Amino acid sequence: MAIARALGRNPGLLQGGITLQATGPLASGAGSLAFDGATGFVVAVHPEPNLQPPFTFEVWCNAAAYQGAALGFQSWPSLISPGPFWGHLVYMVSSNLLAIGVNGSSPGAVLGMPLSLNTWHHFVGTYAGVGGALSVYLDGQFGGPFTSAGSPQQYLGHWHIGANYTLYWYAQTGPWFKGSLAHVAVYPTVLSATRIAAHFAAASATQPGVYESTVLADHPLHYWPLTTVEGQWTPDLVLRRAV
Image (cartoon, rainbow, N blue to C red; front, side, top):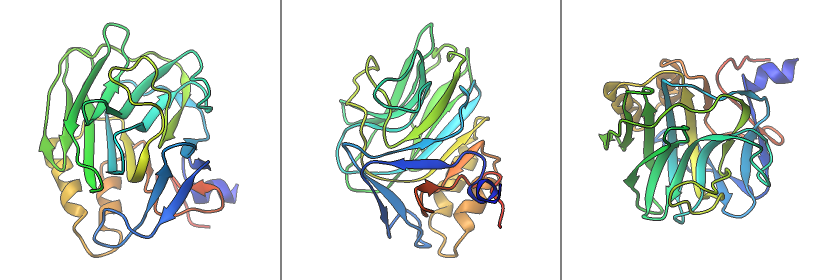
């Protein structure tokens, strides 16, 4: 279908209190989505297997409060219940950190970085798998690693942006993120420190498209810029086709 080609591999459906913002983290002027911290979230509509390591999660975040999940994965699209499984999370913990969590069975792990409010930050979390490192970067600076995160559960589920089920997670602050998010990407590889620094630097480019091209050059599984809305949808730039 033409609409599917236009919206990419796994487009996001907007739910609840979300506002398209004119401002975002890029010097080129691309925007972002603002989440109300109570009802707003984006759900990727196509179910897919829970991503197994190695992987990288990348989020640009401008938090208005220390609460909620910026990115998560759970077995049901609804936030009323996660279904039987919930697996990955980029979320605020109660010590004012933005953290990556991997809910492995033996054991789970959370690793975070201090975050200031009302400021755009570039957050990246990587996980190399059992015996490898769980690492975080904030604004290009390394802040890890932790080395025993276990293996994520295997199941079908949905990516969520702006909210996710957080009950039972370490120091969780509820499901609902309050603030603005942009340029959310998921990679089936561990990005190197050099590539993460290149992404952060590309945000300073004033020419439109430089940052997006930098992200796509690293072959993400999904890339939701959150800079445009088409009806109730926000595109995934991976496999997006012009119509």
